[in-house]
Figure 1 (tube, rainbow, N blue to C red):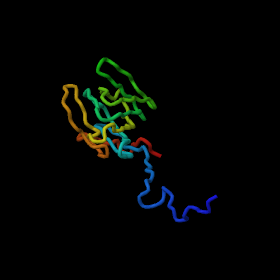
Figure 2 (figure 1 turned 90 degrees about the vertical axis):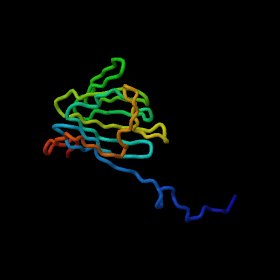
Figure 3 (figure 1 turned 45 degrees about the vertical axis):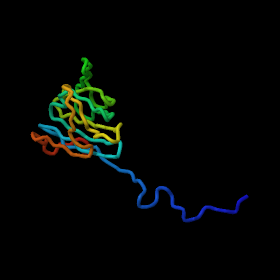
Figure 4 (figure 1 turned 30 degrees about the horizontal axis):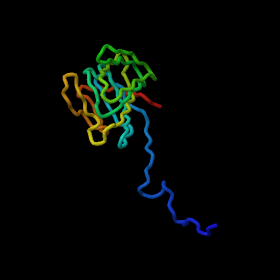
Length: 166
């Protein structure tokens, strides 16, 4: 048997200034009378979560994300998702849709109350912009970064009304 022991000063992998730390978030967003908002909740190198609120409308142009898999989960309201070949499904609270990279889709709000969505995205190409879009006319564009907040120009907030209040 060896009489050697590990040095007492060996740091644990979770100690030290460079240790990766957890990130906490709350799904909380102000409801809207008009427009839409998109707020990052947590952003990593390959995965990000955003809360999106729509008073009306949605993402009304057929498009695909070639460099990310993503999903929407309905937290409040109702949405109708559409595919390019007539696929259609209405989603309510706790329903979701998974969109693998390259899957064309669009959606619209179909409820009188604001639509609140959790959007989860994961990059599948580290060297490409994760929010690159291919539009239905084959135009490629980048809309915004995964850590950017968006507020539409026509936004009108519902006074004192929030999703996730309490």
